[in-house]
Amino acid sequence: MRIAMVSEHASPLAALGGPDAGGQNVYVARLSEELSTRGHDVTVYTRRDSRRLPERVRMPGGTTVVHVPAGPPGPLPKDELFPHMPAFGAHLSRAWDEDRPDTVHAHFWMSGMAARIGAHAHGVPVVQTFHALGTVKRRHQGRLDTSPYERIGIERHLGRTCGRVLATCTDEVYELADMGVPPQQVSVVPCGVDVDHFHPHGPAGTAPARERRRRLLATGRLVPRKGFDQAIRALADIPDTELIIAGGPEAALLDTDPEAERLWHTADRAGVRDRVRLLGAVDPADMPALVRSADVVLCVPAYEPFGIVPLEAMACGVPVLATDVGGHRDTVADKVTGRLVRPGDPAAIASAARELLDDERLRRRMGRAGRERALARFTWQRVADGAEQAYRQVAVGHPMASEVA
Image (tube, rainbow, N blue to C red; front, side, top):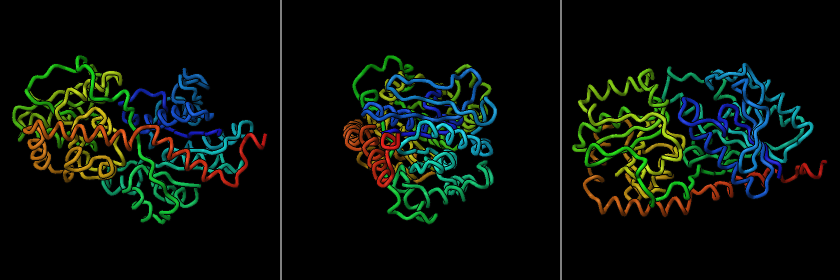
């Protein structure tokens, strides 16, 4: 099949760790790579955010990345991209005049908007993955939500009219139903993890040396919703333990990062600054060793549409302590592969962390169960299986590009 991936702000080529570069980038890159290895012709369309970028880039696995001119050729926060989506969609329509795909897979709501514009004239079916929903973001962020006002209405329209919605977790299915999207229109296709890259066996030499007997690790974009401040507050009630936080800008730039500054203030107030270490951006090649160096991986955001970090920990055989929200409910089996605790409760985090840290046999058992769960449910091969099935479902009744040519 000819598959067009539309990912307006999350390029598969982007370096991870920035405010708008995270799980979606990984999802698009790895799903595209897996589909390419299966013989599909995959092209990813993402916005040009630098004048130096070539029009087309061929990735090692065979996927082609096309940089679409839509708005100024420079970095923009994703919430400021909405006015440029009609131009993005018009570019797709022109491109597909000459190279019509069999199906389009849109990632994020603005990509869905552009994909529908581009696909309409060609009768190409669109599969939609939202990755995050505006209703959830507005519920948790309230007035701090910077999404365009039109977001929720457009998401509702896309969910009701696209060929199929791929939800990343069960919670999202319920949320979509509340928006009027019929459950039979939705399939759950989760995120995945590279179980060959993240695995229990290997050196921890690239990880920083321990400064305390026990280590907690939290990793992700350095943004408030990730809950790193909750982990720092919990640390005050977890003795003889250090907390490593990995993610954000390069280490040399942490001194000028507002979120890093806020976290240091939190650590000062909690009296644990000497037990908190911010690493900044970590090379993806070094992440498995860092994960393996931890006794427990913390994932404690107030909300999480899916979350890849628990999968990386489970694949490495490390137990996960996560908040009982969103995608964590699908990935972390409570008291089997880790613990789920209510969000926004540092005391609950501390209590569960002490339980895990004080029982090495329990950690080992949970680590083994986590690895088994990752292998059974969350490989990129399983993700690609689900996506392929959706593509075939929506392609029924639509002529393939090879038939039109």
